[in-house]
Length: 123
Image (tube, rainbow, N blue to C red; front, top):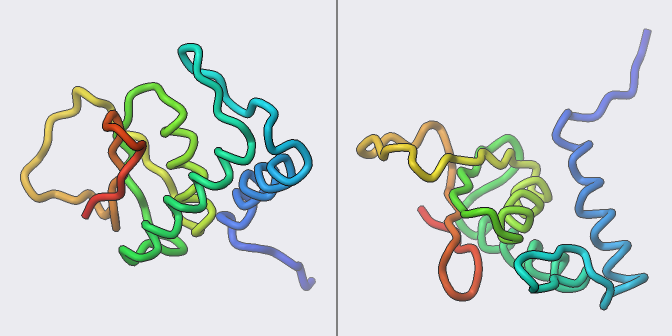
């Protein structure tokens, strides 16, 4: 019996397709609200794709893991969407988790937040 199956990661692309559709149809409508600040659908789409491009420049692609270390903030959503748009898996980390030397835990890259200008890809 032949089946038409797609890789499991491909189903996550609907998040960015959903975001892109809303960015096109209602760019100035709120997508996220956080501490009195509003992120529009156009901003969410643009920021997620910019971060995805930065991650791709660092070699992130299908099947990779991207550690995400941010406070509760819209940057978390952007980093998850960015990783998933590349076919990668976002792996949220707990802020109090201790660093373990040079152990990268199998991740290709990391995204860290809580800095002016939003999330930043790192090594």
